[in-house]
Amino acid sequence: YGLVTGGNAEEHCDCTPEGILETIPHVLEFRDAWNFLTSSDTLYLMYLPVNPPIGALQCVISTMSEVAPRFPDVHRWILYIEATKGLTWQKKPVKLTMQNKGSSQSSSSFKTNDFPRFGTEFPVVFVDARCLIFRILSYTVDGRTGCAWWVKESAKDSPLWHCKLIFYFFCGVSHRQIYNKDACDELMKHKNW
Image (cartoon, rainbow, N blue to C red; front, side):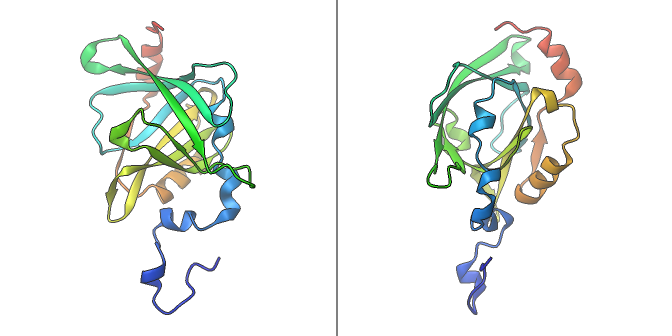
């Protein structure tokens, strides 16, 4: 793919998996998150990086807040239980703006100002009909970044080995598991939205 073309590769190559991904245009079709983010399915957050800290959040989900989104904006709700506040669901509106939709009709990142601790731009690593993995750029370790991994409700209890493999390869910092089946199943019984 022409990643190294000269004698001193260190000056010309960001050779982390994340850096290499940005140089391969052939994978853009696997990085267009529009259909995933505009799906009416409930989305479940599986993993987040350890940093920045998020407190005692449990069972983070996302639902659509509009019926027919129009490119480039998607409006969704983020809902979660803050363990220190009991079983009351917290609800936060988010506006995601898709970026880089050009002649390829693929969007490889989105922006939002609704989570400044995590950054404002989120490059998509991988998306398919069941999972979405995007980078969190606000915290790095030796040039590596962490990622968020979301799945559709219909896939939340499936192994999704391909998503796991991609997550572990391209998301190079420590992560925490957010989704816990038993806890989420119990908390969903107390929906109040």
